[in-house]
Image (cartoon, rainbow, N blue to C red; front, side, top):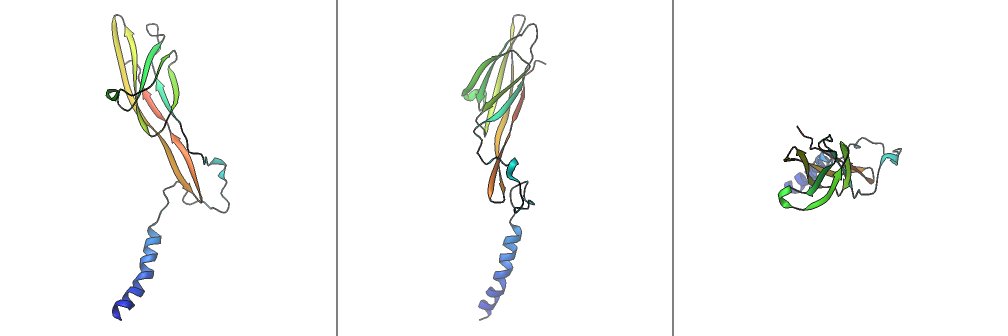
Length: 145
Protein backbone atom coordinates (compact mmCIF):
# COMPACT_ATOMS: atom_id res chain seq x y z
CA UNK A 1 0.00 0.00 0.00
CA UNK A 2 2.84 2.39 0.88
CA UNK A 3 4.49 1.64 -2.49
CA UNK A 4 1.24 2.39 -4.36
CA UNK A 5 0.72 5.67 -2.47
CA UNK A 6 4.33 6.79 -3.10
CA UNK A 7 4.02 5.93 -6.80
CA UNK A 8 0.72 7.81 -7.02
CA UNK A 9 2.30 10.93 -5.49
CA UNK A 10 5.51 10.73 -7.53
CA UNK A 11 3.87 10.34 -10.95
CA UNK A 12 2.45 13.90 -11.15
CA UNK A 13 5.77 15.30 -9.92
CA UNK A 14 7.66 13.30 -12.56
CA UNK A 15 5.29 14.52 -15.31
CA UNK A 16 5.75 18.15 -14.23
CA UNK A 17 9.54 17.78 -14.22
CA UNK A 18 9.48 16.12 -17.62
CA UNK A 19 7.29 18.82 -19.17
CA UNK A 20 9.32 21.58 -17.55
CA UNK A 21 12.54 20.24 -19.03
CA UNK A 22 11.25 20.20 -22.61
CA UNK A 23 12.58 23.05 -24.70
CA UNK A 24 12.17 23.70 -28.37
CA UNK A 25 15.33 23.75 -30.40
CA UNK A 26 14.33 27.01 -32.02
CA UNK A 27 14.90 30.72 -32.05
CA UNK A 28 11.09 30.96 -32.17
CA UNK A 29 10.38 29.27 -28.82
CA UNK A 30 8.57 32.33 -27.43
CA UNK A 31 6.38 32.81 -30.53
CA UNK A 32 2.65 33.28 -30.05
CA UNK A 33 1.37 30.53 -32.33
CA UNK A 34 -2.16 31.97 -32.55
CA UNK A 35 -0.94 35.14 -34.26
CA UNK A 36 2.36 34.08 -35.84
CA UNK A 37 2.99 35.43 -39.35
CA UNK A 38 4.60 32.61 -41.34
CA UNK A 39 5.79 34.92 -44.15
CA UNK A 40 9.40 34.56 -42.95
CA UNK A 41 9.13 30.78 -42.65
CA UNK A 42 10.48 28.75 -45.56
CA UNK A 43 8.77 25.37 -45.21
CA UNK A 44 10.61 23.84 -48.18
CA UNK A 45 13.79 22.01 -47.25
CA UNK A 46 16.70 23.71 -49.09
CA UNK A 47 18.60 21.65 -51.63
CA UNK A 48 21.36 24.26 -52.02
CA UNK A 49 23.32 26.72 -49.92
CA UNK A 50 25.94 29.29 -50.85
CA UNK A 51 29.69 28.96 -50.90
CA UNK A 52 31.24 32.43 -51.16
CA UNK A 53 34.84 32.57 -52.38
CA UNK A 54 37.20 35.56 -52.32
CA UNK A 55 40.08 35.55 -54.85
CA UNK A 56 42.91 37.78 -56.05
CA UNK A 57 42.48 39.15 -59.58
CA UNK A 58 45.44 41.21 -60.81
CA UNK A 59 47.63 41.81 -63.89
CA UNK A 60 49.44 38.49 -63.42
CA UNK A 61 46.19 36.62 -62.74
CA UNK A 62 43.25 38.11 -64.68
CA UNK A 63 41.69 34.61 -64.71
CA UNK A 64 42.04 32.21 -61.79
CA UNK A 65 41.21 28.51 -62.18
CA UNK A 66 39.57 27.01 -59.13
CA UNK A 67 38.57 23.53 -58.10
CA UNK A 68 35.91 22.95 -55.44
CA UNK A 69 36.06 19.60 -53.67
CA UNK A 70 33.31 18.03 -51.59
CA UNK A 71 35.22 17.16 -48.45
CA UNK A 72 38.98 17.47 -48.19
CA UNK A 73 41.18 17.88 -51.24
CA UNK A 74 42.81 14.53 -50.47
CA UNK A 75 39.40 12.83 -50.91
CA UNK A 76 39.52 13.99 -54.57
CA UNK A 77 35.73 14.33 -54.91
CA UNK A 78 35.45 17.25 -57.33
CA UNK A 79 32.20 19.19 -57.02
CA UNK A 80 33.02 21.93 -59.55
CA UNK A 81 35.80 23.49 -61.60
CA UNK A 82 35.68 26.98 -63.07
CA UNK A 83 37.86 29.88 -64.16
CA UNK A 84 37.04 33.09 -62.30
CA UNK A 85 37.57 36.68 -63.47
CA UNK A 86 36.17 38.52 -60.42
CA UNK A 87 37.36 38.87 -56.82
CA UNK A 88 34.08 37.48 -55.44
CA UNK A 89 32.59 34.19 -56.62
CA UNK A 90 29.41 32.64 -55.25
CA UNK A 91 28.14 29.17 -56.05
CA UNK A 92 25.20 27.10 -54.79
CA UNK A 93 26.02 23.58 -53.66
CA UNK A 94 24.28 20.81 -51.70
CA UNK A 95 24.26 21.69 -47.97
CA UNK A 96 25.56 19.72 -45.00
CA UNK A 97 29.01 19.19 -46.46
CA UNK A 98 32.48 20.60 -45.98
CA UNK A 99 33.91 22.02 -49.21
CA UNK A 100 37.58 22.67 -49.99
CA UNK A 101 38.66 25.23 -52.58
CA UNK A 102 41.95 25.28 -54.47
CA UNK A 103 42.86 28.38 -56.51
CA UNK A 104 45.78 28.31 -58.95
CA UNK A 105 47.84 31.51 -59.33
CA UNK A 106 50.91 32.38 -61.42
CA UNK A 107 53.78 34.44 -60.08
CA UNK A 108 56.50 34.75 -62.72
CA UNK A 109 57.39 31.15 -63.57
CA UNK A 110 55.96 29.80 -60.32
CA UNK A 111 52.55 28.24 -59.72
CA UNK A 112 51.05 29.10 -56.32
CA UNK A 113 48.06 27.25 -54.88
CA UNK A 114 45.82 28.90 -52.31
CA UNK A 115 43.64 26.49 -50.36
CA UNK A 116 40.74 26.99 -47.98
CA UNK A 117 37.52 25.38 -46.91
CA UNK A 118 34.17 25.86 -45.20
CA UNK A 119 30.99 24.07 -44.20
CA UNK A 120 27.61 24.96 -45.64
CA UNK A 121 24.51 23.88 -43.75
CA UNK A 122 20.76 23.73 -43.80
CA UNK A 123 19.10 24.61 -40.50
CA UNK A 124 15.76 23.23 -39.30
CA UNK A 125 13.66 25.19 -36.76
CA UNK A 126 10.37 24.10 -35.24
CA UNK A 127 7.90 27.01 -35.19
CA UNK A 128 4.56 26.13 -33.63
CA UNK A 129 3.29 23.34 -35.89
CA UNK A 130 5.65 23.99 -38.82
CA UNK A 131 9.27 23.37 -39.71
CA UNK A 132 11.05 26.47 -40.99
CA UNK A 133 14.27 26.04 -42.97
CA UNK A 134 17.22 28.35 -43.49
CA UNK A 135 20.80 27.96 -44.69
CA UNK A 136 24.19 28.92 -43.35
CA UNK A 137 26.54 29.87 -46.18
CA UNK A 138 30.24 29.13 -46.19
CA UNK A 139 33.00 31.70 -46.76
CA UNK A 140 36.41 30.80 -48.18
CA UNK A 141 39.31 33.22 -48.72
CA UNK A 142 41.84 31.97 -51.26
CA UNK A 143 43.47 35.34 -51.98
CA UNK A 144 47.19 35.65 -52.53
CA UNK A 145 48.94 36.87 -49.41
